[in-house]
Image 1 (cartoon, helix red, strand yellow):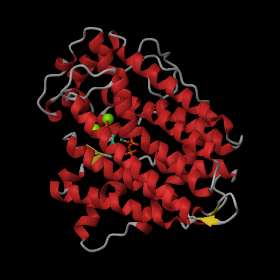
Image 2 (cartoon, rainbow, N blue to C red; image 1 turned 90 degrees about the vertical axis):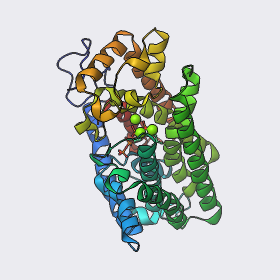
Image 3 (tube, rainbow, N blue to C red; image 1 turned 120 degrees about the vertical axis):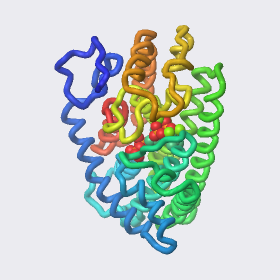
Length: 372
Ligand code: IPE
Ligand code: IPE
Ligand code: MG
Ligand code: MG
Ligand code: MG
């Protein structure tokens, strides 16, 4: 059941997240264009994945590596990457082959390889994240360590991690840009590991501050959005300030995305989410919501009483959410995410005024307006 807030009017269009009285800022027209932009690019990315990550010997390893990629996923980061390439070069959306995409000097580069590499990294982080978070479901199917086994899941993650670098090497961009794209990807992966380490550490610490939380989600989540937005600018040979603006856009909207993910963990049914609702509460994750609630005197460590996510029932989660809502914590998180989205969109002010930039702004709103 979707959590409804009394301040959300009944006629709110279906499909929008209705926690804390969120008012949608996207028009129906932009939302439709963003939906279409994602759907069309998702197809191209999926073709690219099949081409660049074939099932080969040893089959079980590659089947485990492809398993989550084939199970679904929104493909938000590769979509952002392809839109960013189009935005910077002022190329009308989806008018040229992403495998021979004109850089700013008119030379063809393969930006689809970069998009595939980013999604392959995303998949690697999800496989290992589900092991760390002890989660049984992902993209609507059993997580890799449940469907296969722990050893295979660790290896599948490692394989995807290194394959992503091989695939990022296939862009045919000039060597200096290619090295810089690889370097950005490497730094991004290091940050993700650092962020995940903090995420796990924070489970045991009571005194996490909002600043520490924001740093943690920047590292574990937002850096991959920053890479998705800025790597295409590097590859096409954009000005330094364009690369920096896109990177900042990714950091802002990526942090908002993680705050929204934390909200969805509380509010969205498992079937809709494709992962188990309430997992963060059971695992004792520190989120902006629980940090705020703790400050208001809510006993966040006893919000749900369950050993594992399988034993927590919907009613217990609903009751916990009600306490968090009453403490104003849901609204606080929602507003923080909304502010970050506005910051992110403003980073694009120096880019050309084309349809792809409009879609990059639209995808920013989409990240916190859609329930998935
Ligand atoms: C999940 O990301 C991991 C987080 C950083 C919260 P997504 O919600 O984009 O997952 P997929 O790729 O669509 O499955
Ligand atoms: C994951 O954060 C961030 C990653 C680096 C994968 P979460 O642990 O909240 O992601 P979900 O909710 O499992 O997708
Ligand atoms: Mg997780
Ligand atoms: Mg996690
Ligand atoms: Mg989560």
